[in-house]
Amino acid sequence: MLSLRYNPGAMRIALNLFPLGDNRMETRPGARQLITGNINRAIGWGNRIAYEKYGYLFVQDAIETNLRPRTANLQMCGATFQSLIKYGDREERLYIGSGKDIFYLRRRTNTTENPTLYESVTITNEVKDADNNPYQLPQTRAIASWRNRLWAGDGTHTVYHTEHDKPHLWDPLNAIEFQSGTQNDVTALCPFGDSLIVATPSSLWAVTGDSKYNFQRDKIVNGNGAVNQRCITTDGQRLYYLDRNGVFELGQDEPLSGAIEDLFRAPDNDAELMLDPMGVFLYLLYDRHIYVYNTLKGGWGQLDVEAKGLIKAGDRMGWYGKTGLWLMGSRYAPDVLHDGSQQAVRSHLRTWPVQPNPYGMTSLNRSYISMLGVYQNTGSYSVYEDDEDTAIVSEPFDLYRKEPDFLQIGSHKLYKEKPQRVYDEIPVNTANEQFEHELVTEGYFQLISFEPSYTHQGS
Image 1 (cartoon, rainbow, N blue to C red):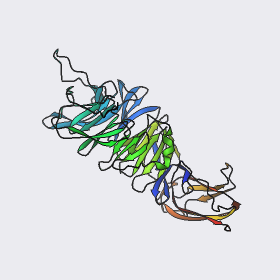
Image 2 (cartoon, rainbow, N blue to C red):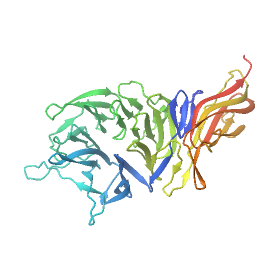
Image 3 (cartoon, helix red, strand yellow):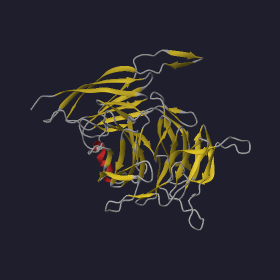
Image 4 (cartoon, one colour):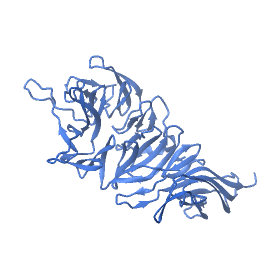
């Protein structure tokens, strides 16, 4: 598994590899470039995606809807809400806070006069003052939907909420303050079962109750909090949050990020944390690099991409940034660009220096690799000495044993998508005090075991 600090039993590089537990790692699924261009912020909305591009707001759902002149910014956050229309009919909306105002997106009936699939609707507070002027809406930097209400944090220590089932009624008196003797502004809101979790930089609070008359707050974590609205995530059973000291699971005192703790020496206010739809892998975006943690088995891996954000759309995970928005799909598929061109997913694994003989030289005779691979995929195994960049041994190998069953379609063969178990014995025959081992593969690869064969005399 990946470790950013020297650990002879871990990997110093584990790019495009997911941890599976028991020292097994697997190539990440292939990704499709769904949207091109530079994207600074995106929000998953079921199978749809609302995103910022060129300063304007767009919605992607089979086709792209341009919502100009509606603008978007880096503070954009969203929450879905089933809004009551009439006679029990409800409309699914995505309410978006931009740090200035609140508006919502909804699907509209396609007409000849207006063929757009979605529209942006500006809302006005239906609660008015003595002069019949609407009160100002919260300048939302965090937003959530809980107990059939919208909740919003404006960057202060106060959280506001609407009336029950009335997302446009923001009474200024419907507010809860979170103070603990120090200035801790609310950074994130996250529904978690019967509670609404409210985060500050150094604490977590739980709001419970079912009406404005019995809402109460309790501090449940002291000393750790969440960096921003995108640094807290849950699957309904577990809750994870990113503090300036690392990644934590609610109810656990020790961070999950010990193997990569060197990351957090420099703060990143744009970091993100997101749990995948299956609740297995936890994605961490830090300093524009993506790290992946296995919540069931433990261990970290890393994606070989540069990103500005994480995205969850339907049952798929992805990322976005300068190269557009990408969503991962099949584990055996290549990466597919927007123009249809393909490129195999390249995995890169390299160990920390290993010194088998603490008293001197060691002979490395051969290495045994047990793995899963797919037809026509290849890899290479290299050995380095004393942290050098030039390999003393480099040997190619195949990630398959035979041609699998296929369906003939004209002149093309459609192969059965099934991995093959491969066991390779690679001769090395070299000697040194320290060794680093490296595996580079093109296409799907799962490392089951790796066993270098060392011989040396004792002390």
